[in-house]
Image (cartoon, one colour):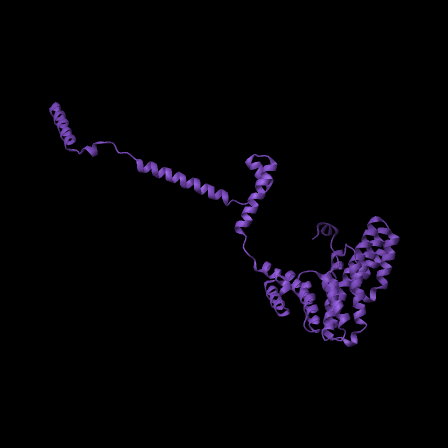
Amino acid sequence: MKLCMIVIGMLAAANLWAVTPQSARQPKQAPERVSTLKKTNKQQRSAVKEEQEVQPLVSPAEYYNAQLIDQKTAKKQYKQRKKKIKSTHAEPVAEDIQRLKMDEMTYAQLCQRKNELIVMGDYDTAIRYLERMLRTIERPEQVMFIMLELGELFMKSGNYSKAERMYFDFVKLYPSSQFAEQAYVKAIECSWMQTLQPDRDQTKTERTLTLIEEFLTRDSIYSADSIAQVMAINEKCRRRLADSNLLIVKQYITRGQYTAAHKRIDAMTEDMPKTTFIEPDLLQVRLELAQAEGKSELAQQLHADLQQRFPAHSITMASNKPTWKRWLGL
């Protein structure tokens, strides 16, 4: 029975092979797949090539290490690639075009371009246009407004030294102008902005105080607002100068130079009417000096005076803390 089944299966397979077309009997080939793979590889190579062309420009040293070539050749190739990228991506800049035409522009055109630059926040370029406008003025009164605007732009750009000179020049040239008072205040403000921290040289702070004293000698012709602004700057300068002197006294105490410390304290005491706000600090530094010199009775007296006169001051509250809390900064 099994033998019969095997014979019948073989006959059926033979009949199926006979009726199958000749084209269907041959094994399938994949020429299209090969061409597709070749095309894909070509696309990958072109993509890699494009990626290499647009890669960021590296320094000569990095390029030298990456390509393992001599340094001279690396620098040469680096310059060539940099020049190529610059020529490819360079676009005409409107500002460069305007700068080239600055000498040919009229006063009105310069003024218009200056206003555009101020709106964009490009104060340095706007200053160059204003300086050019000084050479193309049409009326003498235009100089006054250009000087005021130059001082303002110098302040905005952080060049306080030039702003101070510009404002003082304006005050000298136009003392009777309605803007002279505000220009004087701006000049003092610019001088204050150039002062240094208490641990640095205070020459500029002393110069600012001198300017303030000159301003206050003519306080009768100035407005209350201007005087208030100058007095606020005066207080800041006095505070900074006092902090500087206090630091110097503490350095003298640390080094054991007690005579120099006493002289500095006496000089600060003479200036006390102008700097009453530093009185608790001065008492505190006197207390430290007495403790360093071993004068216990004087130290106790100064400590009691400090607590009685300035009970709510931060120095008094700090001195009343336990020693271990002062050490830990609590």
